[in-house]
Image (cartoon, rainbow, N blue to C red; front, side, top):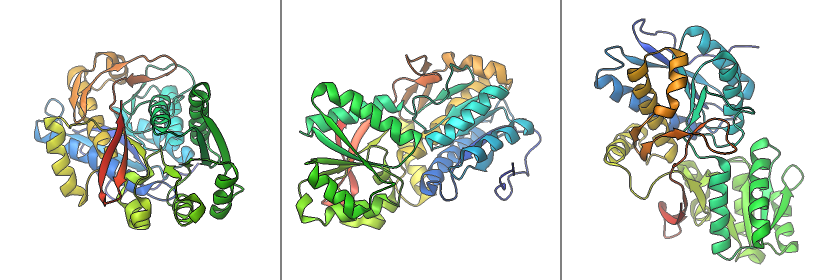
Length: 370
């Protein structure tokens, strides 16, 4: 298996530094904008840690690897990083990629703090090596289903591509909605064009369409087709996976991209630390930071606290997950065992359903929270 190319300068490491591997999608078909935000948060936090004295006087340094949304590439990167002697691995946005990374980390005995991937079954068997900041998909998508029911939607179509992540989302929605009077209608996007999606929505009398597909394609063409079909003027489009969070969505869709509710993992109010970090991230990114950037920052904040308290021994890091109590940008972070989840989980991750305001698409409206 070929080792993925390293970012420029990635190997010029400080011998005295504490090294942490960072898995980030920075090239297609990965969601590059999400990767850039995740990396910005990771890097900002590393700078803050080092400004405050590092890890007991030693600088903290990231060793970044681009996963490009490729599970095999991520697994190879975990092998490489383990060989380079990193104290832990952090990051990743795509769930299927994080799952591959978690499996390798578990086999190698390498602590992995997952920043942003939500798949419930991040690893098949319970492991002490992996912890996660983002909420399980079931918790977020059930909250989204509650929002749909509260908004009066019981006939819900899902335009889904083949993937473990999308299939898991569809199952969560169906299992939650069916006992509550809701119906989930699956539209197979490996077989349907955006125009055919419109016809299927009319035929099935759906009142909501959820985009369980990649961005920008086919999400953007589907939105344009639905928005401009006069038969579907009343239909709600939703995107639980968060596609409208990023500026690229607004740039590609303009007004058509507004009023499409999605999930994001932010509280009603950021902590004082979060407010300071938001300002710094906005400057670093030259745009409003997404929740993914805050996930990146919180990841390093947790790892720095663990490494300061327990040293860089990998086994001691893994044993410390249940003792973590870190004030992050979005609240206090503690890990626990959650029924049905095989990793150490931040159980109180804030969750919101938001959309872009049609009157001002750069502004977000909070529609539901939990």
